[in-house]
Image (cartoon, rainbow, N blue to C red):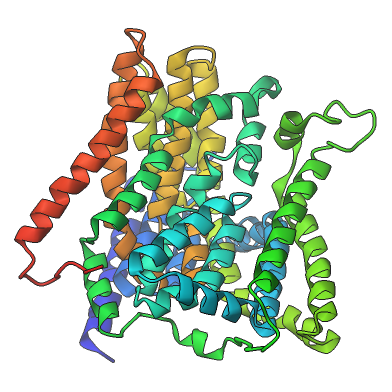
Length: 546
């Protein structure tokens, strides 16, 4: 066994022992909900999982240890209750809660296999290689495709990754950089798109049926999502990288793209009859089917419904976990019929694509199951109550409240790996404590949404981060470590922007001033980083040349 592996295992064991000792020290058996309920210990299990993942670079065991630690704390170290919490409340509930997403992932996996087998992806790759001449063009094309697929972040990650991998490989763009581009145009885009599963999720947590209205009103203040878009475009045109990304991009220029081994087993059919439309039309069918399904589940077409022919109301009333599997299944049938009519695949090959799609999604499904189980056991420890108390105590700092909420949302989403769960906890608190009718309330809600996306973007146990790694087919831990400096840069600028927005709204100056200032701060920060990077160009990690 390598010395580094032994060292990591020793560090992990010592960390776990330290947590156990700390837990025993803090024990208070008189509490009804358990000795660790609504205390800092509620956040210790995800901290353990994240720490182990970063140290050992092994995600599955790290998440499982986090689940086990959470179950131990929730059961007060009772071995029987620990197993009950870990299995029943953790893993089984996780599978039940995410069954719709699992179905969606499997169907998307089958669609990806079908398009690759039929040669559509190869045809698009050849077309793009002919028309996209530079690395800048390849990155902008990836970004543009990510913006166009705004319906759902999972769909975005897997589709963009499958389509753009051949193009990015041809221009020697590292898989880590591709994963970042995918991740930066998945959740951030969905969070500012009113017609998306994320908008529907946010609407569920706002009372009085006005969720989508306030979601749209909060978009100009969603600094993290908007500044991430600015960041991607600016850093692409400015032509530099920094942090660990600079190192992997330098390796990519020398032929080491950092691709996962599983790519070698992926089928890329090369059919002489395949055309670019054989990729574009199926993707369009998938997008249209998902949108129609979201409308249908939201009772847009239901006679006598309060939401009949009300597009905004239907999207506020829909359930994405039901609609997306519904729409993707319809699209799968349409795509199979289309590809068979084009004689690009046979019926037997189309049926073989379904289990192959499932197999391709197994790693992502396993990580998603463990991450959701970790969220469940953390919920048993009252993490939401602990965070709510922190937020209430910070309420006296009125003008700085949006910045404080942004920071709390970042930390909570990072620790739990879920942005939906984060704004599900914080939005009702914001609505009850501040109200959404005031401009400060709108900014606070937007800070909650932006912080949830930011923490989700940074977290190694986030489902969207996992999907971005799967879409780009790069090492998951490498994706997290290379993306983190970029996400933190945008987070810092966003934090400062929320301080300014809170102060400016107090004197009647709103987003039309604070947003341009935020954009200027973001671009100015990048110029500063580029200047500093150039001064260190002859050191360990030279900047990538575009």
